[in-house]
Structures are given as C-alpha cells and as structure tokens.
Image 1 (cartoon, one colour):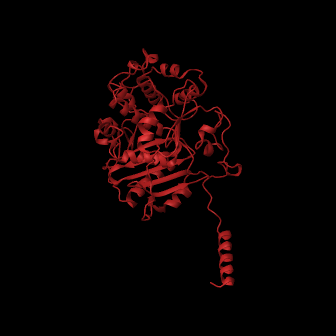
Image 2: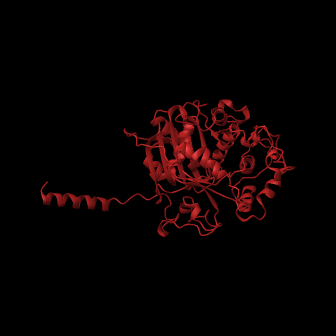
Length: 419
C-alpha cells in the first residue's frame, strides 16, 4: 500500500472509532465507574452501592473482612479456547438477542461458557479482570455440600442420617442439634428461619453475628426453635442450615473448611488461582455465603460436576452422592422441580432445573450462577451485581438469565426438553 494511502486508511480507522463510542455497561455510573469502582472501606458498606463491583470481586481487600486462603493446584487444568466459534443466541419475551446484547441488558461482571472443557465465551465487565476473585454468596452452599459428600466417603461423617449434635456439641439440646444432616442438605429442617433480604430478617441477624460476634453465631443458631413443618417433609430456603453444615464439617474432621477445600476440591480438580473463604469472627468459615474464586476456577468446578465428580482417573466427589445431590429423578416428590418451588427443584444444596436432561445449578443472590448440563458438557458461569437479591423482589433479571441459559443450551447442542 502506498504510504499516503496507508495514512489515509489509519485516519479513517481512528475517526470511525471516535464516531462509535464504546457501549455503556448497565448503570455503570450508579455503580461507581467515575470513582474507579471504589472498594468498600469497612464491614458495613462493602455490600452497598457504589462499592459492590469492587468489593464483590476482591472481598479480601475490604478492611475488617476476615478470610482464610484456599491454595490452587501445581498443575492447573487447561481451559483451551474453542477452535470453532459458536454464536450464542437466545429468546426472551418473544424477542431474539445475542450474547453481547445480554451483557448490554444486565449487570454482569463476568461470564464464562464452556463446552466439553473448551472456552466458548469469556467476558469481564465493569473493569473486572481475570485475576478477580468473585464472591459466591449462596453458591458457597453447593461447595459446602460437595465437602459433606467427600467427608462421608472418607468416614469423617458416619451417616447423613446422623444428627448435628453427634458432631457439634455446642448445639446439643438445640433444635438444629437434633436435626439430621440429610434434612439440612435439603433445607428441610422444618424450623422457621426468615430470609427476605430486607435487613430485618434472620439471615441479616446471622450475618451481623458472623461479622461482629455480638451475639455469637452459635447463640443465633440455638435461638431458632419455632417449627413450621415436620423435618424432611418440605423445602424452605434457610441459610442457617448450611451454616450448621459447615460447623458439622469442621467438627467432624477437626480441620478448617479452607484446608478441606484445598485438599479435597481445589487442588485435585486443577484450580489455577488462589481462592478464599470469608470467616466469622469466631474463626468458622461462612459456609452459607462466602467462598470467593476466579471466574475460570468457578468454571473448573462446574466442569468437575459436568464430569460427574471425576477429573481424569480420579473420582473427587463420590458419584452416588453427587447424583443424589443433583438429579431431580432421585428426589422425594416434595423436592422435585415445580414442587419445591414454582420452577426449580432442590437437591443437596443444589438447584435442579425443570429439564428432562439432568441439569442443575449453584446460585447466589444478586445473580451469581454456575449452571451445568453434564450430558452436553455445557457449563455457564455468571457473576453479577443485580439490583435485587432475589427474583421475588425483581423477577426480570432472573427470568432473562433463565432464557439466556436455554439459549446457551440450544446454541451449543444441549437438551432443553422440559421436565
């Protein structure tokens, strides 16, 4: 190309770029873009706007937050890029959209889609990068469940039908102390624990006690005494049940959940990056809401589940336990899709999708997601800063997430037949 023509071509390219400004990310100014997405300054404001974006991807840097590290593998599992590009399309409210349009419509901080262990799509938003450690919120519940299953296989926990008090002596004589581990896994203790996300409910009381130690977490758990149902009969979401499970794990093994996560999950599955648990003031990991990991390592965990708990020749999570945890067909009728909730079923701390092909998810408030369909090898990881904690408060982002997941399945050869 002639030098003059080359300079003219470059000028047109620059002018074109200036004429087409980068698309704004939803609510980016409200979420703190002008301030560089500020980090929370203490244990009280990290949850609020405009501190969410940074705090929820670097919680260990917030002053006053206590954490315990989880170490990665010396030989990380490769996640190669898919050789053949796949277009992700979906329909929502009778309109068709692309993956890019999904990101432009919802407050997504990270998105990773895997097919047979290959990266189909990987996006970071709101200034996040691949070294961010994204907060799980209640996706941590599923991690806790996996550790429970491994603890049973190793003999540290004798039976899922043991009561809590066999392991956690501090809860002996309490209602939770008399509850079976299996009923906690299914969120079916029958004990009334409020979880409305209004700052005045029992989960807020539990979180405040974990952060301040006043009152103690054990005293909050022991104060739950009112019963709404017979144990084992009904699913009612209650974070306290997972908090109790975490304390069963630590008591039964004599080890921290961070050490167990390192040895039993993170290293054998081939994690690439350090992760961490947030701990309560009493030193116990917050099993119900506070595991933090990179987007790709959340993807590797999803891939482990897609492989039915096996990585290479090693069965990391016991197969039968994992099927009991994630297969809708194995659940009592009260826990099946459309029965446990109007849409999802519930297994052992996993949400069960209403699809004929076994499909399940890890979910946390404000849009945190790992969805898995093992037969198709499809894993989707999403981190987000949705305005509302749950679909009860604002159903639209969650409804569009479900539509997008179905579009991912359809675009990549998954099964979308209804349960």
